Image (spheres, rainbow over the protein chains, first blue to last red):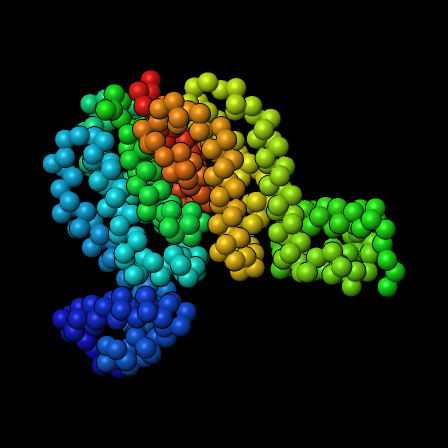
Length: 201
Length: 201
């Protein structure tokens, strides 16, 4: 087994992530084989395990990389520049709903029950760390408004947790009814944002 | 095959529903067999099919009967007597969340993925009829407030649909984090109700 230079390792890892990002949404986690992934990258099957412990491990890494991309796109929304607290919550929620609704990786994860399979590879501590990270992302733009007393709730952690909960409704498009869904989503987002803010008008 | 009197048919049907209500939450739809159900009732296995087309059919009937019980309990909440629009929405949502969280049948349905299996036995038209029924239940106590201009949204169908969507968050207790969940639920309910109402204070 030959060794790889740091540069080669870096490239292969990136290519595997790229292959996962392309194949997982197309075929799902279960039907995508290690060979499918290594063929795409042009390495031997056994080499895979020098980079990732398992297919699920790569899947999680793909999701993590995707999460970083979402964070970058969120940063581009310039929520820091929004001065109206109701508007900042509305814009954030619309952004997250749109991400979930249009991202093939996330859709695949949700629709096929992939989420449960991937989850069994995570401990509750890891999941809690992720939730905490999400809540902190929200608090980054929210806390100034909470501190200035713009919200009914004065616990920023609780406000952020409530905001983070709303986008789970995306997963219930079929329950809500696909025709009804877009209007329901918009009313829920606007109503919730309005209700958070003291003396909203 | 002997015939049953109307009275016997009525009793057996009721007993099968009762057996389903007791066994399905305990063992799940898949692991509960027709024989388990008929043994409980004291009839032969083949007799089952004179009452229900399938196990799933009985399951749906059990759920329907359960839905009627929930409707009766909802009626007992006397929401008609509540004069504050924010309060009526808050009380309704707390009631529904509590029902979902404490009803073993509903919990089983949700937790085990039973819902998807049962759903494959329903057409989209049947599902839409159910959604419509739920929306009408909400409109029964909501419409007077909408007509009086108490809500920001003036389309009662849309307001009711949005209210009906919120309880899907119960299914995400684990996603939200079980410790955080009760506070998040309460903040979401109160915030949403507050946001619906024009000039809430």
